Length: 246
Image (cartoon, rainbow, N blue to C red; front, side, top):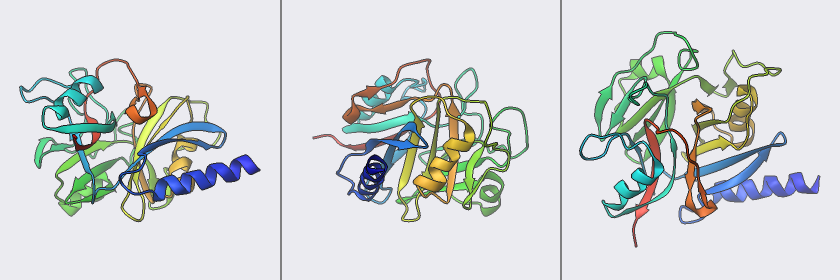
């Protein structure tokens, strides 16, 4: 009981911490280990990355860190930010620096991406939002950065209707949500979990009214403050939080 209370207090302090405090921390939920990272869109630089200045796919956290460093910035944390084709171009909507590079896909289809409803992470003018894809398309909302993925984990406070509590499908998974105060919350499971458990992490522990699954199995995190630098196959789009280099 004491351990559970201590974890809850630590998470509360972590989520309420100012922007200069620790960005990523371990969290235990339903006896499963996760790493949760937070960023304040109004005070921190949050962006999506795909290619370098020459148009080549960045693909790795090392190349992303070097890319932002060349612009006088330091990479605070990063993770994969959506599904991609074999050439590593995004499967659905992708917007970078206000330019739509790939169009939104709202039809049902195979795989997790097509398990409707799916959704969009939209970053614009110091704000972050996770929005169901068809609602996003109807709104004509403008984003400085946007990535589409699926399925939605949490939709207006409810779990995705296809998630089963007794599912046996377990993968390392990562996703993103936005708290009521506007904080961007990114999380990755540190061992394989079901969709149902992962979605409840966002709804019940992280308190995000809407949350979006980014990917599974290939999910990776770069968090130097935790001495964490996950390796693996080259990635497509990546989410990165940066700060000005000293």
